[in-house]
Length: 314
Ligand SMILES: [Zn+2]
Image (cartoon, rainbow, N blue to C red; front, side, top):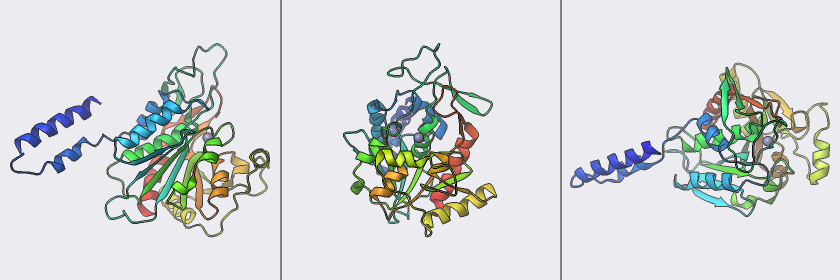
């Protein structure tokens, strides 16, 4: 924050000295908050407790993140947050893309660890390429990785992108309740990238894929949700696969929620927005939902770079 303040004061001084010669509007623009990396946002969001059902503070933090950037921000009773960022210059009138991740995390710790999930921050540490929590607790990479990539995109001043609708949902881990509650009529977009997948080599493109285990069935039964059928015609998937080939030099693996158990909120959105073109991607995370949960930093950076390239050509 210090850097931002200093910039504002420098701008004001410059503005006053040039007041007779220049409009200050250009200089005022420098007050826009600085952009950070996905990892820096991950560290920030990890500092705010956000176990399922306790998302209010993190939700408020995200809403404020949007407001200070001048985005249109909605926050509902379940603390879901939607914010809109205009398309970059020349792309303002393109169809919007929805970027979606869930705010809440599974909170678990080893027996001997003293950690109050209601108020203690999770402090990420990096060893080699692995980000873990400082103490033996869950890290919140699920879905903090997704949250932080979306935040970095929203904060950036340099990415070429269509209008963005960033949707941050709550209570995913105990039953997709935030997504279920959210009023999708607030969304203008019909293309959705969910960032709650585990593993960067694959796209989740439907509820069921191949002969994988039927893990989705209990989920479907529990939430009484219909299928997310595979769409033969998916321009979003085609574009993302094309960028994937040039970025990674290989084909993306296609998968279903049944063999990944990730991107599960897509079931809710498939139900509420049957015409939406959707996909779920994510970062390499190991031992998810356990005190040994860890996320690859290079994977986070790579998936972010990949996402940026996707946004450029969507
Ligand atoms: Zn998740």
